[in-house]
Image 1 (cartoon, helix red, strand yellow):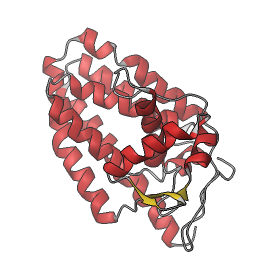
Image 2 (tube, rainbow, N blue to C red; image 1 turned 45 degrees about the vertical axis):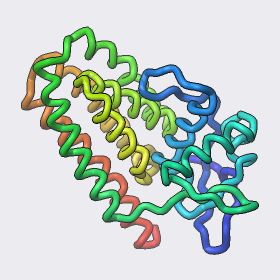
Image 3 (tube, one colour; image 1 turned 90 degrees about the vertical axis):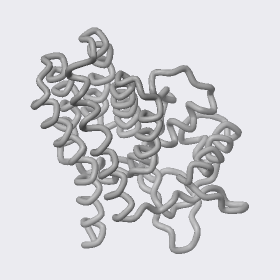
Length: 247
């Protein structure tokens, strides 16, 4: 996928991987955001996609160059991510991406299943078709990003789709809980899936889910959501196991 992205690292931290420059900053959750929030959203997407590596230290100027913005909003956005526990400050160097353990990822995925599967299944009986159709452009963006191998765009569109879908349940607190869990998760296996040509199949599940919801098919919605959330932990575990085996 990519060439080496600019970063500074402390001794013993993993080398930062290749990542193409990101030309545009995303807006998550279907809401208008400040420029600082948009920068933070783009950085979160890079964290989730595994393009900013755990243990690596990134300077604000290096990240600014990667995203094509000035260093000040990047520094401010990274301080927001510090408050969220996603990165730590390293004096005179930058920001270190927080490590996420196997147990933490298992716990995040377990909670997401408990919340998202029954909530989305319930939407099969309550959401209006016009509300569901309004999410189709985001679902198609996910497919386009997967086909292009653009992981940051994939994560951004995926977040917008799922949070927008959950918002139809009318519980803003639930949406914020899932937003936080998603931000803390890591999908390090996405790059391998792109290289294997398998990410597209996962992306197309979003369209399959919409079709099942519009058809009011609760059984199909439950099956797609269960399968789809199973990828979240499965993708990460596959990458982690490969790292342990030296691949």
